[in-house]
Length: 189
Ligand code: AMP
Image (cartoon, rainbow, N blue to C red; front, side):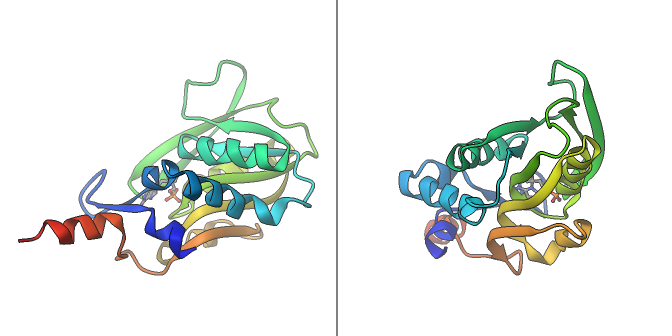
């Protein structure tokens, strides 16, 4: 787990002042890191009878599709508005930095299918809660939500009552040493 954490870059004040952004591109580009991330997300669900993995745009597509492949099941995208071509359901939600809306095809999940929701970061939980509402609205059987990163101090789990939530990496506070912090430190005179 520490090796995964070490591959995540932390960018202060992105996309706006006061936000510490967890940049996973430095993990994704690393062959061993990417494989370890997918395995850590998928491992608990190999025998869970998952039918579909639902990934949330956009980083949830990267890891969600890989986890679906690892579990041998299908993949369903939850997208930002106006991207899905067929009939959709929509849910609005609050982000750590702003508000947004998500959509899913109404026929993406067959009622009773066992669903695993995957995303990169659980922050305030608004995005994940909207995804849960979309999945349950079409009759999906939500087995669990799996995240690479949980920002524990933002208490996102409180917005997911009754759901099984798994996070590979948990950060207790916003100030975390990482690649970004090291680059900044190295740059100091
Ligand atoms: P939230 O709805 O607050 O739980 O936000 C979760 C979504 O916003 C995830 O899809 C993340 O991709 C993104 N996100 C929120 N906060 C951060 C952060 N500090 N670093 C990177 N991504 C974030």
